Image 1 (cartoon, helix red, strand yellow):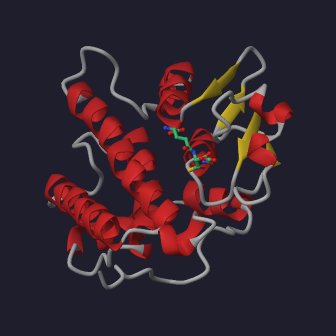
Image 2: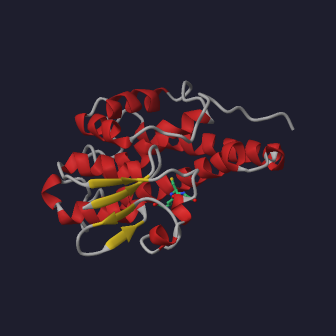
Length: 218
Ligand SMILES: N[C@@H](CCC(=O)N[C@@H](CS)C(=O)NCC(=O)O)C(=O)O
């Protein structure tokens, strides 16, 4: 398999799940800054110019949630996704979708704080609104996690990979300290050997140059 990958982006979810499954893949690295995601050769692989894109040997797949789900179905013995009919399935599907609700907020904040060519075009009002929505999404996750070790009662799953990835990016915009369950959960995720080997393969991120981006004064 071949993973088209930007360090510290959603393609990390695929890298991490592959490690959880003990599967090898070749990593093709890109930068989000150098135009390589708009290169016609990459657009032929990923028409929207987004990562992840995974070449499985049979087909090319985009969309991190779909890729994770597909891999879980290809390797059911790993039990990383509740199968149809399992009582945990509905919550699992909800959490997989929730992860993208949250990731799209982070992506919008990345755009406002970091990627606008002219930073004067950023809108403090929009940043305030999106940051508050991200805080609300984190609060919802804190409630879901409660006393649980992982998001599903059945234990670690691909939903933890989807949402866990977000939790390492969200603190650039919202401090996690008030979310005690999430802070402990992040520590648990970071201690997983598969997470650590995925981080070792991830590459150096060139998205964030500061530890925290506060909401600017309106
Ligand atoms: N819903 C898609 C979103 C993919 C996506 O937007 N990836 C970002 C990186 S996190 C990207 O490739 N951005 C490049 C761009 O927008 O130019 C997924 O989960 O794979």
